[in-house]
Length: 428
Ligand code: UD1
Image (cartoon, rainbow, N blue to C red; front, side, top):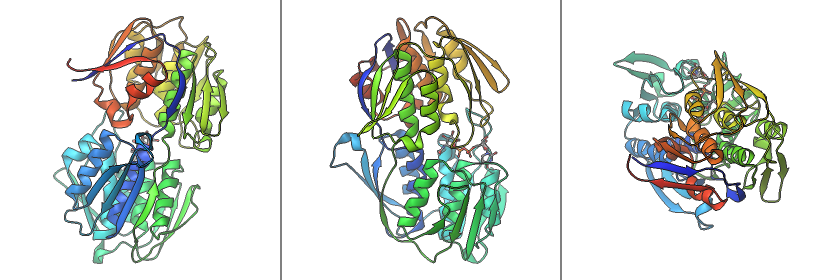
């Protein structure tokens, strides 16, 4: 299995092109199931999760074709997807187990085909992650739900969902996406309240509108949808990855570096940029993106994760890595997932001083980190180990890097370009 080797201590400086957002790509691709016409998605990142999702869609009968962008490798891929005929309506266990986002085919399948079957996802590295809110939303739109053999089958009586009221008891990104994709083809109007407002949901809603959907309230927590008979093809470009941008910003912070994040958009990154600035970094919008520069001294922070527009749970691990070297004690609180501190023991093995107390982690800044062999546990946790390794004395070896390949496009290449001593090696 491949590993990543980092010899830490280099100050990172230069420009990094931010790729298309993984989480937006994974909710835009299933939109292809909603029409028999062609959906063309641009700026798709080259990521293992995008490839897995493509295979899942292929299994359902969607034909796909990818090509490089005419503007160059840094502008991702262009994928044309066409679900002329949907041949299968099941998201099987093997796919859902590997990639939880597979459940995002449910809403569109149910809307277009009147039925969808999905394996229950089971536990995953960052917590229990049930799908009850997704299923409740489908039931609110008239679906009948039954469970058997570890699978959930949703069926629309008469073959078509009906408009309804979906009131989420708490905010869920995936359930909002599934409900929205289901409601656009339902008969009559629907209203989704307490909807997630993540920029990836805005991307989804705008793509659906480009396909002929009638949605109002985009960017708010109340989405109103007037169901239409059919949707048509469209061309849509995936938004830049705000989590990738924030991750490289933390790498700039911990190395006292100066990085311009090309293509990054300030409006989707407000909470991250505010936290970076509170940590003492210079943050400024440039013509081509955002420049983030550290001074070599990181200030401690008190941060709590919460749904957008608040500080993202997907940024927690990377900030924690940066704050291990802060001048003082930071307090991080995780409110979204119950088991999202698996990077803590690994960071402590590198010399960090982090103490987890329930949902909070107390991070006492230390003078230095030392390189060590560490193991990646999930996507963002893996990135926190890379960030720590970039500042640690000596060599850090990160194993199980398939997690990183799920969500960071050309990671080593991008970091090498700004001066990091990092390489991928085979074996181990
Ligand atoms: C998405 C993102 C993930 C991010 C998360 C929160 C994708 C592919 N993934 O995940 O990177 O960390 O949003 O911003 O876009 N929950 C339930 N029942 C449900 C659904 C969710 O209890 O039916 C709980 C979850 O266990 C969690 C919370 O709700 O505690 C929020 O999860 P949710 O927003 O749904 O996350 P995902 O959509 O899975």
